Amino acid sequence: MLATAALVNEDDDALMARVALRDGVAFRKLIDAYAMRAHRIAYRMLGDATEAEDVAQEALLRLWNQAMKWHPGGAGVSAWLGRVATNLCLDRLRRRKFASDEEVPERADDAPGADEAIDEDRLRARTVAAVQALPDRQRAAIILTYYEDYSNMAAAGALDMNIKAFESLLLRARTALRTALGGAAK
Image 1 (cartoon, one colour):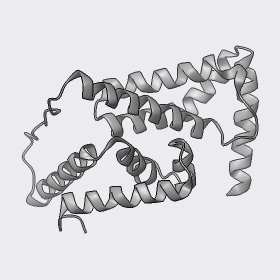
Image 2 (cartoon, one colour; image 1 turned 135 degrees about the vertical axis):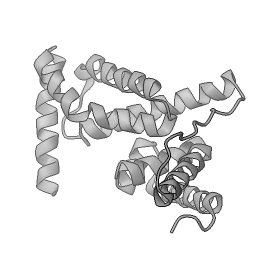
Image 3 (cartoon, one colour; image 1 turned 60 degrees about the vertical axis):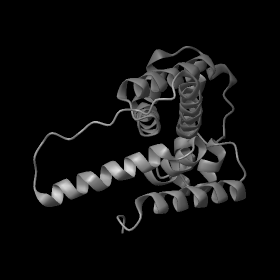
Image 4 (cartoon, one colour; image 1 turned 90 degrees about the horizontal axis):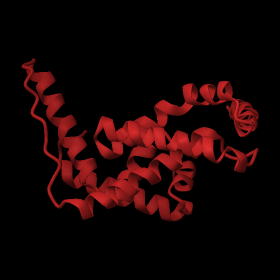
């Protein structure tokens, strides 16, 4: 696994060197490999597909514009884009608080289904609402750790925190989710 990560980082470094020279083919390879991850992070944090697309594009634009500053041997493009996307989302969430104090409207599911499917949908909606209700940094910790499978160390890096502070933040987020969901999640 470690050898695979090192190989990916070497490939990332080689592609970034080409992108720094404005190689569009190399940039397309990076987009194909990593754009969906940035989009998933943004969608899960913001809950809006259009905004998620904007965040992913902004993160990729920053990758293109800052390619000359790339330092080989780091965590790789995936980690860098994850961090940039997370920070862009946190910025948007902060601006939302100042732009409006209204809650995001919830969508009702019109499609009838089996009882079990309905129960699953209700639990999923409660979980999404509970995650969305978390403070911004707690939400980011949950999304990076549980939805994007970041290690605690990688997620701490994405949030620019030390590992102990991140684990404390993650514990508070899980406790808040457990309280919000009550006995529904098993």
